Length: 209
Image (tube, rainbow, N blue to C red; front, side, top):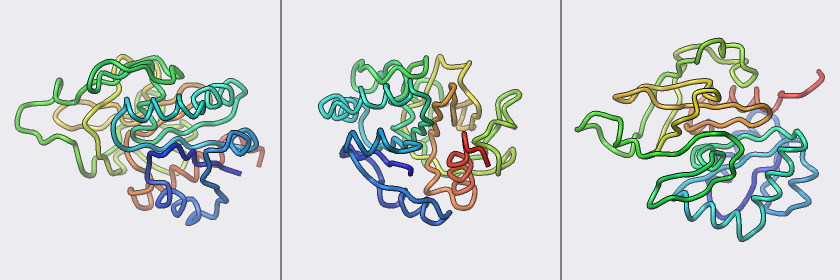
């Protein structure tokens, strides 16, 4: 069973539909027991980092997530959900994240040329980091496959965990991995067949068959 964590933030039902399209059973839940009993967990997210982090903290789901990751359960963070995996964000101040991956979330405008629109919205090619073309989450995709982004902030100071980048006036972190924790800055559920193949690969991580 795969649980999509419901904490009041995220495109939950479009994500659920994507998993159903690849034949995977998922539930949407903010219940601690559901998360603990699941085989894998998804942390979605749209909106502001500070609001999302506060909702996780108030519901005590931040503690549950950390415990399940510590126990070895695969976790996939999507868009804002990926950003929450890091130590902190500088979106509207300074706010602590889950601290599951070393790094910080910073404004895109700090590193892209003037004139490029923010948020960064649209399709961009994925470029695998060195020796990451065989990362389990890329099992069914290839270099330069395109995925769909919608974001104004990016993950930085996280070189060791970066597994893919994308170009938007500069090189931006597109996907990360650290042990059993994975993150996609883009939206797999909006990325057509490529996105579905990434979700399919995540579902197979750790499977014996």
